Image (cartoon, rainbow, N blue to C red; front, side, top):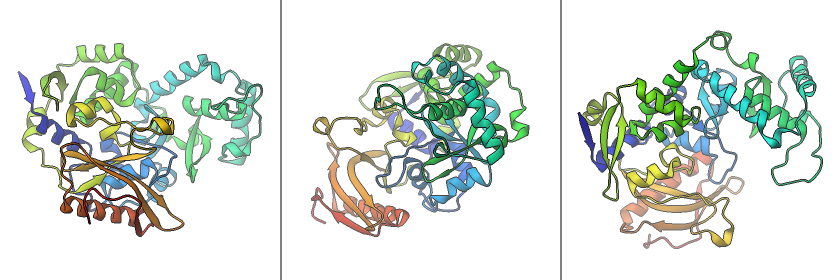
Length: 391
């Protein structure tokens, strides 16, 4: 049987599976939230709030920034590693992450830019210091970049720390602000999880099954890109081992696209709630918008972040946030928090084509900006632009 997923149903399913369907209030179980998402991307840029904090706050506004470090440092509920980018991942997933440690080691063993890192004896010296002195940051070591100093050049000790982190020999035990504090992997990863042996094929099956569970529906490429811990060949082989539900997705531009779906798709469709009408300021690294092709197919929303685009070539701005209302992206906002001054400055605000910017919608935005202000400690809103309508 092949299901037909209407565009509206697909949007509702996606928002529900990613935790943006509900009103972001109520009791907070942070580990459960991260487990539901699978992982949360980390990013050091702070415009309103850093991506990881913003993503979590968007799903429950009782979240506060110290909670994530506490979950890592005190409870050991999560660990840091690399999905498509640096992320926090539930610690319970560790036995299924062994292949990712091995994949990253194999990759960086061949990477040209890691050839200047400390050699095996130098890396062992780092581990010996950590074993004796306890967790250390990169600032505890001193080595210099030799040769041409390119933009992304790193000193040999920093490359060695990164390499051992990717391999799982070292792990982030906590962060001091945005600075990683490294400990030996054996001190961070619980022993009972470290010694579990899961065959490689079983790890692939788990990764693909759990990716599809969180996606709800998608292509095999969507499944592969979810964790970025498998390759296309492995995902194709997984698909051959599973009796996947076949579905046809109606995209926002009226196309019909073949996808695979979870086995309980029919029940999910029956149970899917209508998304809250609250207007949300969505982080550019939020999982709902991270896959730009999926975003455009489902919502007809063409979006990219322009932090790496030269200023003169930007269409929108350096760090522009999508605005989600119900199951529609209704606009974009460029806003910046100044935590010392206690202000959020609205630099630009755009309504999407075909969206009427009403007083009610403006009121919803200002209410969300006020909530963001309480989260970031910025109580005052400063409008440096004229809203699409008079307030």
